[in-house]
Length: 124
Image (cartoon, rainbow, N blue to C red):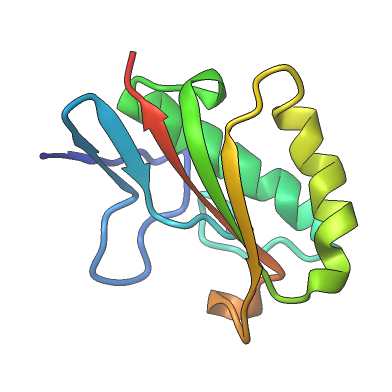
């Protein structure tokens, strides 16, 4: 197993890694709308989702992967009422390539985030 770490995404706020590579597969920790400096993005769910994708792209790059090699995503929403807005932003990042996806509403997310996304990707 290889730990993935980059300063271009927020540092882990607990006892976990930004991601792990095992047998050419990258497993990310969930990303919320924290900047690399650890500040929560203020704004609506669309703005938060864009920051989540910036973070995901950074950890994927550090792992030698990319959005184009993602095979599975899991999206956690604070409210299913935000599904359409998150889906709109999500589609800007996954337009041609469409990985498998799960999406669930949860009671609460870290830092009271509106959205959290984790990915599994093939390392190039």
